[in-house]
Picture 1: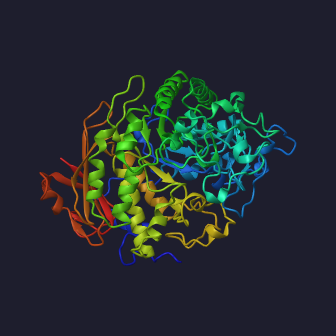
Picture 2: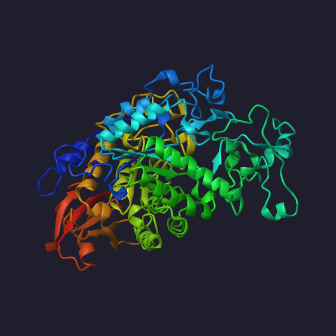
Picture 3: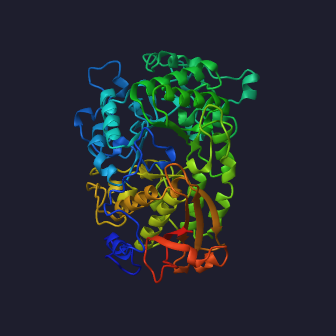
Length: 604
């Protein structure tokens, strides 16, 4: 599919149209350079989490700058033999060769898009192969003390962080406390040597979950480690079968969600003090050695709350002793309910979480064409996140982490492609841009999923959404029609002129230019029960660094133009008190909001 010609049908699909339409001084308050790095952006050591623009990336799928590490551990490295292999650049479930050297080389590409923080999928040493696929994603950790050799070395990671910091970019690690790679077997499921299968895997779980009630009645598994695998994990305490639940596979509900093996991975007994202290020690040492700026925590809801109540404060306080005063952590709680999400920022004492509820509401509004009141209903629950913590940063909705799609659920572009509304390419582009503007300008911290800035679409979630930025050899990736480009994933996709790249850079520039978009208290002032206007205010008081700001951000989810009058008629705002700062699409007078676009106004 070829990209629609510039300025076709609805202007502003191409950046050339956008730029020409917002170039007038009355409508644009932007610097000339589109790198989006505002001059006032604070040094990374001093910068608050709410000031970041994140880029989430799988290093293996980004860029291969060092082919010598493509197979992982060296052939003669007996200690790391299980971390060698798994390379098949034609298979979406295998290693493709991307590495830390590649990320380092491409830092200018990220810098120029306005990225201020990079979140890496797990980079610690994995088991290379497991159940016929590879650990390219990083979530099968064996060794919590060193970097996976497919990605490089500890020294290369330190260099990457150093080079990112020189560009005023933070680096966040994706960490895991719930499980390790799959090493432990059971006699009941895998036989006396742990190498076979006794259960009928065609009937569901490989090893059916044993509940606490069943354990009390004497039913249990007999865990064992197959011969030769007894010392695979590091630190050594992780090789003790007694630090794992050993209750069989999770079926994602009830107590199995916390005590069962996540997709067969060895589930740590996080209720034990020795495990709590052991995991705290592991990640304190990671902080000591690499000095990351923060952590994203995997599978948070699959670990008991009491673990987080100890782990989170311990890590936050320890980082300060290492001079990382603004160290921050956010968790993955895969739920679309603010009631559950907020439990982990309040009771569990994790400063923030990925806002799946925002992603869900935005999808309802822009993919399903539900009323914009679904967004108002979401934000009405923001107070659930407000709490004060002793020793660590307080929780609030402004520091939630916004995203449009990810490596598990798939890309937002895929949701549009699969919609029963049968959106054409033009509509997919417009809705994608509007979704990302909501992500940037609603309360919360924005995260761009790698490849979205190049129009990646995908065929679903998981492996189907983890395409290569470097030229790909995966057939199911390369047959995709990318948005806003004539390229495919078979090409190099680091195009700084791509419409989405340029648009996200502009969004980042606006985000950094107006502090109220980062720190302002949000209020939903207008919504409706059908596609149309959704309006919010972002208001902040004066500080010793910035003046008071009061902004009105208006999104139009309808396919026809809307008037700002519908907002002023329903609120106390007067037209004379509203000054247009930016419109993504010029349409009529300053009060008109073009279809599937947004505008930002200043309120007196």
